[in-house]
Length: 318
Image 1 (cartoon, helix red, strand yellow):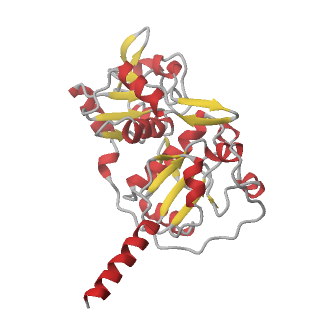
Image 2 (cartoon, rainbow, N blue to C red):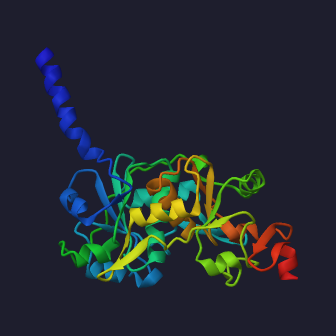
Image 3 (spheres, helix red, strand yellow):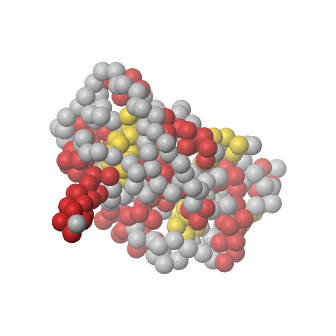
């Protein structure tokens, strides 16, 4: 009996890592190449037109062997509610989407964006955050995306890809990762860090997104642009953690303080959240999904401009 228990324990010890690879939040192409073909590993290609990252035709022309495709912009990962675009889709809809991709709760998901630009990286970060907010922790991002994989000379497949068998994925909404407008206002009043992940022009109010009703930022926030730690090497964009941590230190963020990341519509904010929470060592980071698109829906909300102090949304649009 004892020998049977030992054999069973040994089998579990061998089988366990196959279904739970526990990768770091950001992995390199060499790591993925070594893991390809592992049971329970799903390579999810989310390329889209963002930064000319590609589409389904590009996926069929060249892809990581065994990968599955789901367009970041077109598959239903985000939705418009009211006048706010880009919000987290309904949990049931996301469960159906993920199940249809053949992804189960015990799978390890490697998210692959195009690797063609800093905003494209936000696609991978947003999908990563979506899995996390659904309670699925076995997820990682391929640094450099598909462009990096190809540029480094790893194997590329082509041709029509067969549809995966539908799996059974269920999610549980992790509300602590989501910041509501009311929570953002409470954080502002309490002086807790608010991080605007947009490029500087949006932060100062010189540039305005068509998704927002007014220019400017949330008063009291600091600017940590989403693209500051991403660098181009041989045609692919890579996130450099050392550069990121130097920027966090320069901005003076408290790694223990509750922190909210935001942008215009929760895309660049997802990149900011990923960088702060998963690589930057901040212990309690949430993301304002509606971001400035939702904040500016209320005329009474305060806005800060670089040259105009604090005014209300209503004052800026009237």
